[in-house]
Length: 88
Image 1 (tube, rainbow, N blue to C red):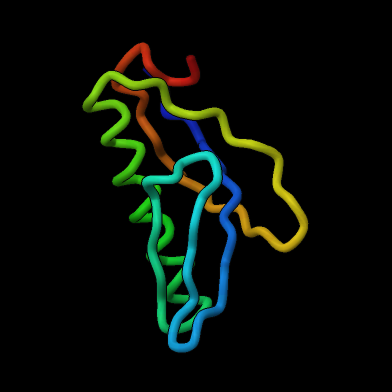
Image 2: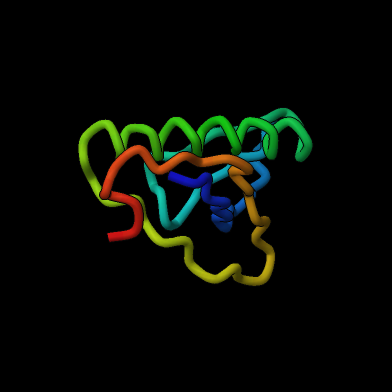
């Protein structure tokens, strides 16, 4: 199987002390950082972890939606689909 590049839109929300990152398509992927840079770095890990739970539980991986104004795209450079559950 070949590696697939996935890019999911993320919403960054400034709180009193952090930047919160959420994904509409993958609600299990939630993280934060003390600044935008660290929040975006943590977002990759949160997204990879959440998607691995989908595959481990034989659930279909959500198709990334179109990016909306104000969102950032989080790219998973190498995502190896280990099962038939990618994009069902």
